[in-house]
Image (cartoon, rainbow, N blue to C red; front, side, top):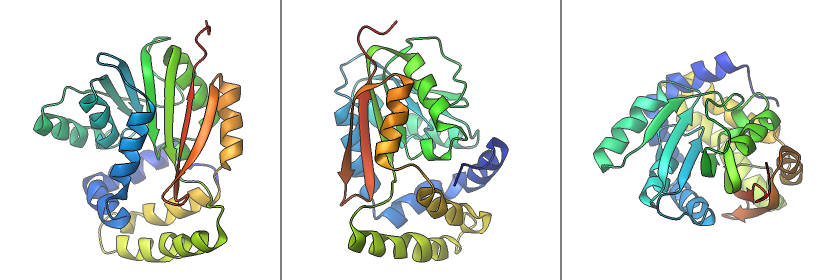
Length: 235
């Protein structure tokens, strides 16, 4: 299914922002932290590298980038997420620049960053192909890309087990909180089912200007890590 219009995404995720971290930790059993660390390692950051975490939410991945020594900017379309990210950064004493921005129209100059990450956000962008072109634009030549995302699980048994959890148990648990009553946790499983296959996503990224693209299954294919880079000779 295509992502809902931007205003609907802002409303939905803005309403669940206060419960976002609790729900993600509880419902993923904390495994999302391991996925984020894997994404950071894939970027091979050097101290002082400029990094952008796009669709940053409450800042978990952005803070991992900062901890790795990158000068980090977090950007998200949903304004209510950013004060939560800022509070985390202050508690952890990590410098973090935070910007409200649409992934399809980034307010950054060409070649502004050496590394760019997106964790479970590209699926919620109205036009992910346009967003990938913007990612390529703001990356410097040779800049690295890391995208964590949910795709359809290829293994039928594992897909059935996770599908039962994702489509039935997760929304029911979420409904015990205000976040569940917004419809967000009904939308999320449906958005995964309707999203691109990994090979299709790689084709989008290649068309946007990335090369050396790969995708790796995480936790049996529950999530995938897509990596690539902007060509060193790119203008």
